[in-house]
Length: 158
Image 1 (cartoon, rainbow, N blue to C red):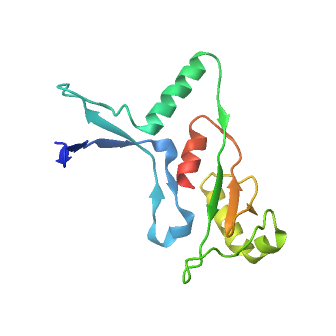
Image 2 (tube, rainbow, N blue to C red):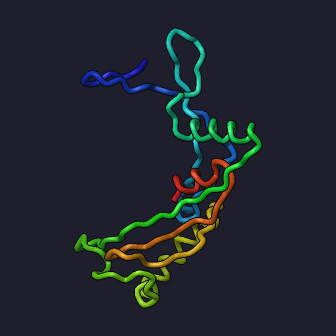
Image 3 (cartoon, rainbow, N blue to C red):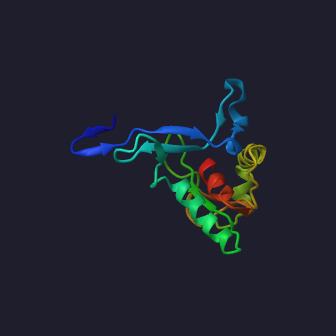
């Protein structure tokens, strides 16, 4: 049964695991936590069977990849994540000013950056490079390209 709140309908779904996306999270090994992508299925109309939810972003991506393959193409893609890190106590960026590709700033946080890269690699995500970016406290971690939906899955995991 769907949930309706303030005139909005929230669809209830059954989620089916995509086994090839199963991955143990190495940075929480003591708690035995894993990540797995799911395919949501819902009832549409009066159909008694559950169908793949047509607005699920991963499903849409897989459908588009299938269309490409039917035309004889494949997709090789990647993501470039840029993010700002704030000091936990001050809630301000780790540094001020513009430090694009500064080795001096990166060296201050290299232990953390290499630990992140190591954990991502154990999960099958290969980081192409790591460096500080233009804005205060900003890092950039572009990923190496992957075929198919894998790049999107890697981005989600990041």
